Length: 492
Image (tube, rainbow, N blue to C red):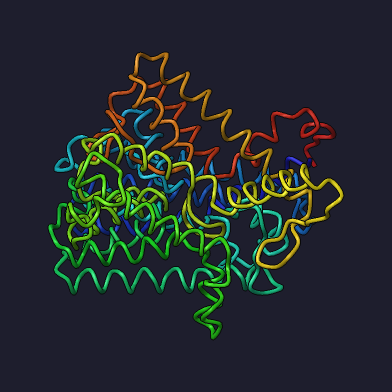
């Protein structure tokens, strides 16, 4: 691995990131928050200086190898998080809090340490949502789309950061793929913002909430999240865009371009819809009754619009890892909380903005297990594993098994670390899966109207690492713990 190429490309990405910081700086200046505006400008200036420094490093024009692409993505994300933490520090956040909030935003997690929303300025609110919007679709993908100089290293970095176990491409050129995806991403954001404004949400809030919805992030400028606007039209609108945020963006783009059945032909998307509908109905039942019985649904009025909206909103918010809330589901019945906890281990579709393990992985493991059971009974039978009619290679299944095993191990370790800090078990379990899966809210003290401020600084740092590892799909980070990753390391 050539360190110079890794640092050169990572610093070039950081330099481009400085432009993003200009938007919240302008908002702070417009609202008269001069000191905070200067903090954003300082962070932007530091990013630009690092970008200029990248030109002094050797490696220009050299082809990037796979390991170098993985290292570049991991290093770039850490540098961006540190720079993104500067405005938080200037606004009174402690170092651990600033790191946590910055990591939560750029990974699209939506977990927060905020306790007093009135003390936060408009520019910081915009930065929280904007960082989610940039980070969830992919910082690397954004700059590959707008920075031709990175095209040489584009493929390695694009797929090192891309969510899901498969490589869905819309174009033979990675830069064109990134442009197509961001065209759809921007369009959905603008459409949602327009609808929210039309339904009575203040324009600034509409922009922030739209950035957070399409990115499956969950930061909101309102302390009551989406429920604080007290509008069923706003809730249904956000639900629709959360549903899209959890679906494969490549398939959505193909549907818009004249292949409307692309999404419905996807096994994963059909599974996604089935789980959302089933979870909504089960939650609607448990909201009306402590008994999860089919014959109780109609009798308890569980199919009313209000109940279905309440249940459907939280089912979508959790499975898509958006993390918005319309009410405190930490106070719901235990049966309801169990359903939400199971959804936390699902995640959205591969190729979406959602976090979590991804449904395609869960689905392929389930199908592979059924095939193994079938071949146990009929050992001479040959039944290849297929997804959407295409055979899935064995190495993909092996990679998925490794990913899910590492996911569960990291989850267990995280629960142990958080639990040893004296945290109750519901909080420890859900804080761990909510950060590792980039979900945001959990149960107990980290419920939808709770926060992570009460954790010791060491635990906040551990949970921040959870978010980083989970956003980069675990392997991208953990591979550097293997000695082979460091064999042959040289500067040039």
